[in-house]
Length: 200
Image (cartoon, rainbow, N blue to C red; front, side, top):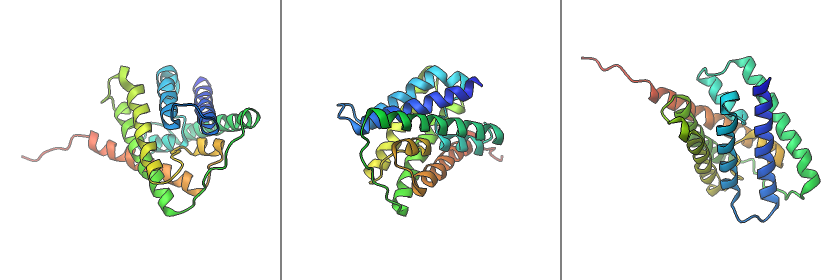
């Protein structure tokens, strides 16, 4: 039960921080706040749930066998509930701006490329190639780079279907893009992390 609560808390907090940042005028950019928030939760709840706090990350982990199907479903349910709670809270504390909801393939591609970089970095932590004391920096940094890529290509740079739901930026491209790109990034690292046998 603790890991589901951790996923709910992490996703809800991330969604809430992103929503507050979008609605406000804090001098720190939203991508940096999202990266710092994710890094915090990697260090604080990583030992409980692995800090997915993103359905695309959970499905990417499922694709390499580090989580089972039934468990993945529970993770995603907890993440969506956390985002829903954040959405409810945001409605009472700020006035959320209307975000662009472009449904073009370009949007899906941008979100996919951003998620690809993001989960590629996460995979380095999963496979133990990153020192544990740097895991939050690597994961948060990977998110920052991924968001930057997607945003510079003209999207909202969310990379997270649950957060997209919580901030009013949800459509098919903001779901499929992160999932497809996330799985591809994780699968590529999985492939590269296994040493090939050289024939003699």
